Image (cartoon, rainbow, N blue to C red; front, side, top):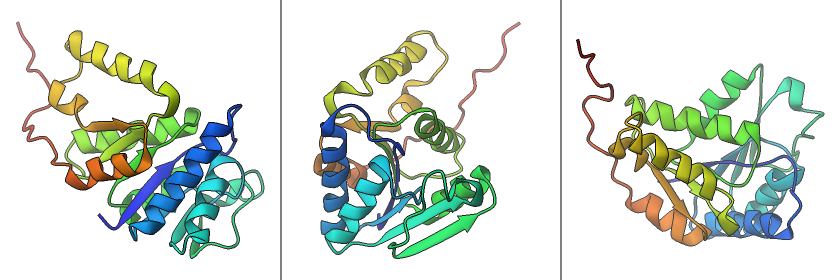
Length: 193
């Protein structure tokens, strides 16, 4: 794994721990020589993450749609910045550039990006690690919801285990480096009559 796409908020949230986490993640990526691939903004958690990567000598690649250039205020000091036409193009390019995916605290956009790469993994479109950085239990409710889906028979346990989780950036990156994708040949249950 040489590059990691990190999904996170264009806001900083109400708790300073989220900004600290973004800075810690940036430093961990840079120290390991892992290239950051992210949404290209310079505000909120996105900006704190990219700034930290760059301050610690790492590489940061941003991918931002043209209509968000002003809203998310594109980061002009990145190693590379790709301005694309749409959100779909953004997500596809980020997935192509990344060899792993992490969701930090964020909102709808972060969850949407996370679930898309999880679904692509379930369908066998990639075999890359996908994880949440679960600081202060931010993703506890989401993880319980996924467990409930397994209990209800709507998500296979093997697919549930595609999503890694840890509260510390370095430990999470260790888990991602060691990740072995599940061997699931069939992901749908055949219809019964």
